[in-house]
Image 1: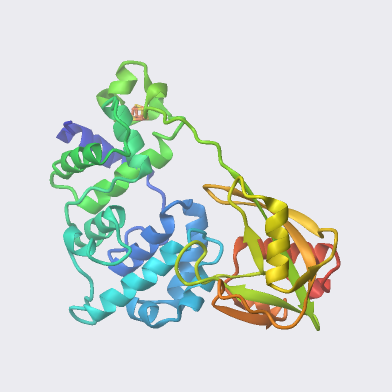
Image 2 (image 1 turned 90 degrees about the vertical axis):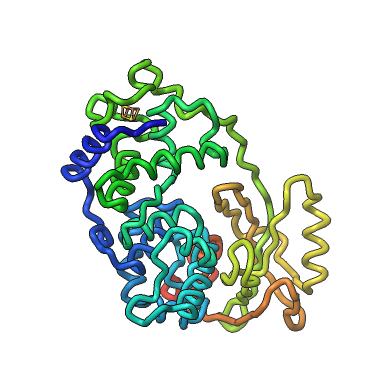
Length: 363
Ligand code: SF4
């Protein structure tokens, strides 16, 4: 796989003219770049543009992030999804603060050193080291992999580690005298704006080098994986009201939606017997739900849909279930200050719409 100088030159000229302005673009501050790269994983630029300034205002440097409580970090992250990123970011910031070379320049400056930071994978290590420190490490995100699959008519799955290593080597040889960080951003931008899933080949700056374009086979690359159906998991959530306060529980810090607050609830894997689980759950937790569900809410994640029946419920005695790490009786208005799961937001909204809580009390 060869990426000759004339190709890179055309790419860089196009990038100079076409690149989008973004709040973090042009910065060589490693922390700012790290924030943007953590947020941009699985998330659109337009969404990140809204969160980024809020984050920088609240956590202006790596030390303020390292010292902040996880709950506050999750709150500022709320809505961006994939909360593991926020927890990993916190762990990474603590590591950097502990291993700081100096307060002025606490960061590692090579790809290999960045890979030692907890929660930092090859993508982030390459992005931060190349953009902030001009380190020649190629970024291979989904957009870049799509471009490469077409440029070279790659038959192998781009998820294959062997193929990724080959691409990494080929791209690392092809920075020439350009700033590696700008070359990486140019590839990513080409994948976002030009070589999209439905590409605009007519205006592509590197079409003369593209094997798929030459063979009129652009639609065949990247090779498609068989699509998996997204499963639907059902469950129930229980709204327990006492003196206009609702019972909220905090999930364990690690794992799916770790550290977020939610209503008492369960979600079943496919093929679990629903009725008996419902009966066991309410008996074991001393719940007396109303006979009819108040609402049924679908909430979707990348790997499953969740269909939840929402029940108004009485609680006999006190709540006690070690599956959650903390509980609180929250004024629904004040609950907004807690980091809440997306489903919890939807349930609060549904309670307002059904008149179960005073409208002005909830967002
Ligand atoms: S010519 Fe088309 S398929 Fe090839 S790199 Fe350009 S946009 Fe992508």
